[in-house]
Image 1 (cartoon, one colour):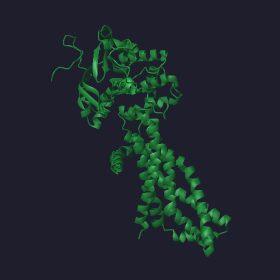
Image 2 (tube, rainbow over the protein chains, first blue to last red):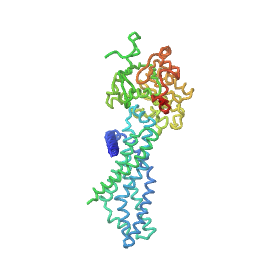
Image 3 (cartoon, each protein chain N blue to C red):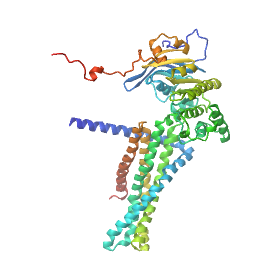
Image 4 (cartoon, rainbow over the protein chains, first blue to last red):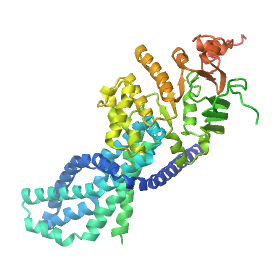
Length: 260
Length: 284
């Protein structure tokens, strides 16, 4: 009993300590943003590696998720003769939830883990120390560009995931299962709201997820123990923690935007 | 404050003030004291070696001088500025005049050799690309790697990587360079090249060099002055010739790589027999 309490206390202190360090790291990161504003090229270069290189996995996943939604939606709606609502079901599911959440989870697995590993390896090979000794601040040169690029990339990737998903749903519903094309698009047009579903659902959600995912990824790299095992653990933590936090934050945002 | 145990007495010919003065340096890692009340001076224009066995805190000393870590007590001054009392901006200003060659070279793996050397110039100057190109090629020529400018760090041998890093470390014409184990893991030819380069660059560019190493022979061959570190303090110091004549058992063991002496091969542990449970049981 006492041992259990001790372990719980130790674990709580450990996580509080990490949260404190992550918060200090974030503040330091934000203080480096004005320097980055003078050299936007640094963030644009990172946008390629975290955004453009994530496109294949995002587009492929979006396509399959949309196709599955089309199939599942059809199988359920056909019993009620409501297959004309399939466009609405696919679009709302993707815009409000699946698009931003799945894009964030895929981002964590593809780009977040790569960010952590890259920064951890730079630390292990003394590249960050060398930068400091050359009077170059790694916060302005390494961490902030990656953090900002990730936040910019996230809503774009979520938007692409959602759009490709809708096309996947359309392909299955209209081309394969014979749902009326006009009904598919018109139902979608009449129910999907620009502010509620696109701005709140896709843009705001994914900016918040992007903030969280990149904060965790960059911090884990910065905080990694500079050994092969330490970097491996940090990379795993990035994927696991980002997934959990994104899902938790999604619940909070959903309650705020759509809650009663 | 009592006079520290400096190597340069009043009877020495008048020298300019030391570039680096360390007084009462104390630094702990956890409960273990890496340095206890250490004093030392690094003279301008000289090659000073900091030597000692692995784990003696040699690299830590360089990181303390560079302001990457702060001492728990004592004072480290570089060119009159107390490193650990500087704000980030002032520290970065000072670091533009300092340089460090890391043990691994620490080249940026996503940049070519040329871009690595150009990195500090692009970060800290507003020189045109044409002028940067000329400067980079001059630095690469000095280390014999002008022809390797387009190679990536992964395509370089260990010795080439260290030379490329050396070219980068002199890019901004610093007043001093700290070398962290520059000879470790190098073949004899590369080692010879590095030894010659360090001495030549020091003299030609009017630098102050600090070499941290445990390669006794190589380091002693170019050092003007040597500090020997062990177990948190300076065991001895002096010119290579003076240390060669030292009667200290520790110095003799270290300089001549003797297996037996005051320095123990074994990490402190319980008695061997006791650890193996072979201790004699008292007879009944």
